[in-house]
Image 1 (cartoon, rainbow, N blue to C red):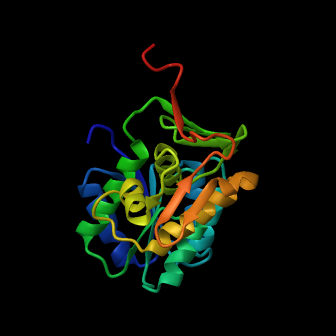
Image 2: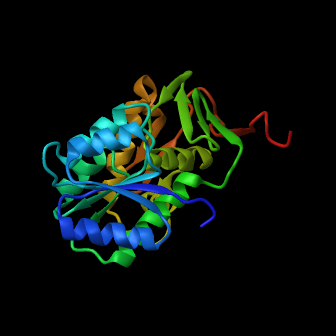
Length: 244
């Protein structure tokens, strides 16, 4: 690993926390651990990591609230969150995604699966080093900085939300199926439900504010992003610094 990534593990079960930390360290990551939600928020806010592995059921401040607090803080708003939960019901997973989680793993899990999901999230966060800005109407997405704005106002998107928005922008107004969007945003081998994509799209629409209707629903198929004032909705322009 060319650059050691920093991960914070938030887990109150001592044996599981020790096992996760050990395996992440063995995989080459720098790891810190917190045993409760309040300590986690303080630790992560003080020194934002590259990724947070967050258990849903933790004392003092629950995992859902930890995720919400991290998302509203500009210092930690873009830190990827991998949520661990013993709850397998879809409603609980949806709650985690609405709170700001980028992905989730349901207990019990194999350590290989956890490591693969961590690696995938970090890879998505790093991107391809692209220096390009996509533009659809008043929506801009900077692929290099992983930042988006609408009408000049920044959008506080999670990593997965950003990648879904970029996928829609690149589609040039065409409808993307939920399966296509899952693959683009989360990569191969990540199994999520169609409802997961719907939750993320609802969050993006909300963050688009008055421009939320730019995302159109094709019932039973997927979604598209259009610029109502432009018959050719999607266009990309190179960042001024590219090739300089």
